[in-house]
Length: 452
View 1 (tube, rainbow, N blue to C red):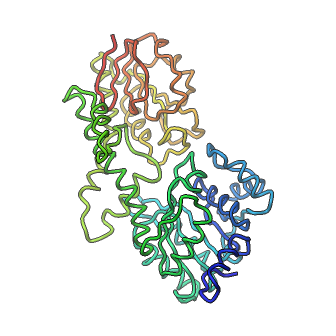
View 2: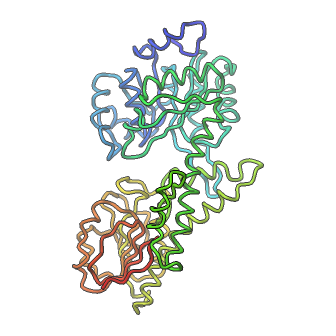
């Protein structure tokens, strides 16, 4: 049964979706795509997931999740594959031929010039167009620059499929999901945003996500508004973090713990400053401002400044560590430094745009030995010139300094008194408990503290 068909009563279409009479294809089975496909399968019991990575497809078809550290996901994938609600394929065109609802959740990154790269989305759109039929609906969840659906996706689908724009639906329904809590977020931690290319597309998208999301659905005017909502959410966080980071650099000048002042200021309901840190990473916040910067006629000085501030924090972190070493009389060319935490966020195995990358690069260029520690990362190849070690091995390498970049919970157990010499320690996440030792400690946002 087709959903984008106003000749059929709306209630009948809702029931068809619930009953599994409407086949759904989810394109992209990564960290966000697989949880989404699993929730769709648990809801409508007729989902085919498409991914070009054959090992991912094989793993899913065996009833296993390749996405780690997502509570409940492994059990859900096993259940929906076992009962036939979810199957996977490495042939997106075959998925498109079978499906009536097409849900796209593939990455949108930026190139070396910080220009949005829509090539993956465009490739998937061509695959969908090969099987697109009148009455189908395409739902885009990938974060994209505003006007992508109207100016890029719809014309591409029309041209490649041979259909008129009025013959199929198109909606933008951004994912509002964080790693480590994907199922909770998809199912209703927040309301879902939907916006269609026309009224019928919006109504259908709202109907679909009301079946999935218990928190409800906010329908906005059109796809461009929905696209802007997602980008604005990321831009807000980037700008807010940049302000906190800039304030944090005043800790030495003011001789105060800036974070203490921020926390006190945040007791007012209209103040919500974030926390200073060693940098901003991941596949979201560092990229989304570039979906606005330089893409339209309007200028964007605030967003550009925020990006510059946040991108400067790894260098600021290293400068503080090197300053501490100099004041301790340690020659940088002889220094041994341990970097704690490489992923962009605690508990998430992802290093895309992670602050650890430029931090390690700078240290390798200036110090004799750089050791890196990350309890959840398996591939250390991006950190050239450094030596991976386990957390327990840090006591054996005789370091002169340590810098915490990512506050994995495993670092809570470090016994700082075991180090024989006085260390220079930079805490980039305000997470270390080094009270009672004689180490020299710089905490971003709080400044230098020489322990007595």
